[in-house]
Amino acid sequence: MTDIAKAGTFKLGDRTVKRLGYGAMQLAGPSVFGPPKDRQAAIAVLREAVASGVDHIDTSDFYGPHVTNHIIREALHPYSDNLAIVTKIGAKRGADASWNKAFSADELTSAVHDNLRNLGVEALDVVNLRLMFDVHGPAEGAIEEPLSVLAGLQKQGLVRHVGLSNATAKQVADGREITDIVCLQNQYNIAHREDDALIDQLAAAGTAYVPFFPLGGFSPLQSTALSEIAVKLGATPMQVALAWLLKRKPNILLIPGTSSLGHLRENLAAADLELSGETMQALDRIAAEKGA
Image 1 (cartoon, rainbow, N blue to C red):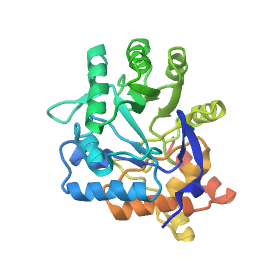
Image 2: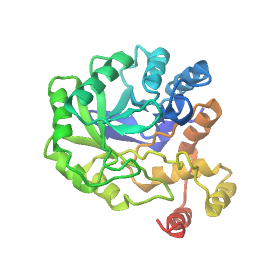
Image 3: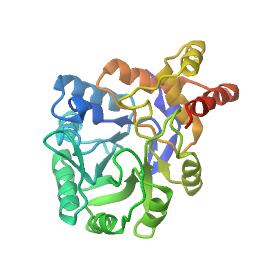
């Protein structure tokens, strides 16, 4: 079994977690809506992830909605003391599976209580405020009002730590005026590197950066260079893409998601890959070739 501790650790709130974690989004049905085809398989993936040393799981009650949190509770409750479960609020799902903004005080408060109930915990380790000014990526917009609601729930003891998702550098700075921001979760991978400078700034501040869609998301990464390097290393392209992220900066925490035991094992085995400086340079060129 792969020792994911080889990938190192980093601080997440008041915890130190291994840098290879698990994202639960794919445990829901198609388009992250409704139940999975095989609930027992989803439970098996979660249990193997934790048995393999994963101590950081990313989820949200709007996955499903409610589906992934119910599965996490069934699979893992009562939770190990060293397991950090990170969730998100700020969005809700429409009956047509649409992703909609949910920023009112009542919606944010209800979302925290839904997560508490569905996960079966008295306090949430980390709650990311998902910004929805643009569904497709970070966009400027005032966050004081919704973040103050979340900070108030933190003062009540319902939330231990606060993070942001889909946020700009300015929003991170603005957020720090309201409460401590322990992590940022944005889209980032070997081909989409708009956050390069921001990652470096967060690393200098000791703040975790958690890339979502580290493998491209609903459109998996495609690159001839990536495939050729993977063949040379005896690995899969996706393993190389994860290893690149681990090498990119020590504050990057990975949460690749899957509903397959085979893919879970492949993802965790990225901890075994060592990339030379020459290989990193070759991989760095992928973003330039894609015009990122």
